[in-house]
Length: 132
Image (cartoon, rainbow, N blue to C red; front, side, top):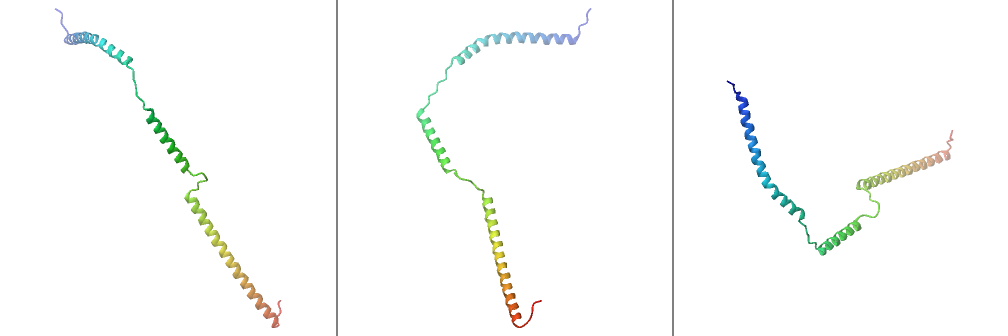
């Protein structure tokens, strides 16, 4: 008496079922393949046609050219200076002018003080004081 192994028996049943399923699916695949080949040939032979309205394309081109020309016209032709640079130059000029004005005022005050000193010196000499 040969003892049958339960694991081998279950494995044999599963393999048998898989083989039968593959045979059935093979028959189904063989039935579907010709239809797929026919559809594939139809798709390969299908020609795409498109109606292009040349008038609309020309209108779009003209509009694009017009907008491009308008943008080019609006672009500045000279040197573009940023606002912060312009403000910096104006501020520097203001402080420079203010400094020059203070220097001129100080120079005039010193000149006036020297004239007063010279006047007092001349009066002192007239009164008989001698410079040492």
